[in-house]
Image 1 (cartoon, rainbow, N blue to C red):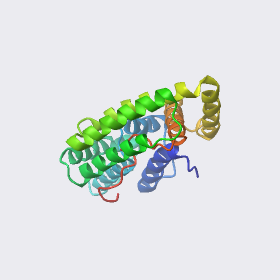
Image 2: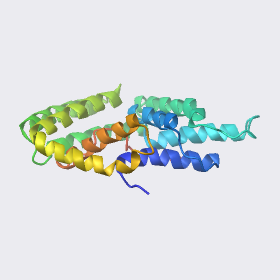
Image 3: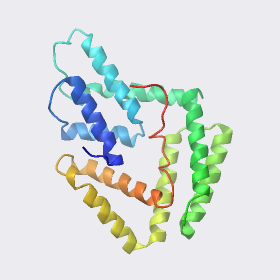
Image 4: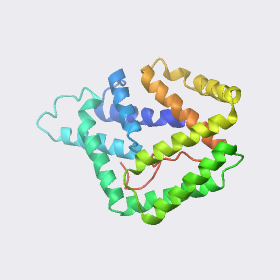
Length: 223
């Protein structure tokens, strides 16, 4: 089984849904694209699995329980509902919100301590670190998922510019080789998302930086 950090999200969703459905069939292209939409929305894996669990538990106790759930799309509304609950929990500044604010402070510290960034990356990392500290101090978590995504994208672009085209192409070739096994299983759009995420991780990790995302944020209980 793959341990690729970017593919793990998709693989975990597939394994959980297939095991709960009790059917050996794997995900279709449409289902992979649905998982991609949840990933792009910044929904942590545990929130997606919780939504799938809620949908399938409700089905197991409903009038149509004798009918097998045929598609992951059956869980779409429940996953979106779980995502909305998570976003409200962030805004209410309970445990979820405090964990998120701690993550913002951690991102700021990591950016301040980043290793061997080039001139563009250094300047932008310092600016983003200040913004993160300001958000954490103000307790501002409004639209934080999209805000982090945009800042991370700008930082990755700056790091890539500092690296230069030749070194960047070499890293991209390594990423492409690592994703080869998924090209036959997933639609091109999903593989391209995996490619972009894998490249982002590699560029950030090279400087001791984490992904600037609440995607891996723990908390809120188990599935």
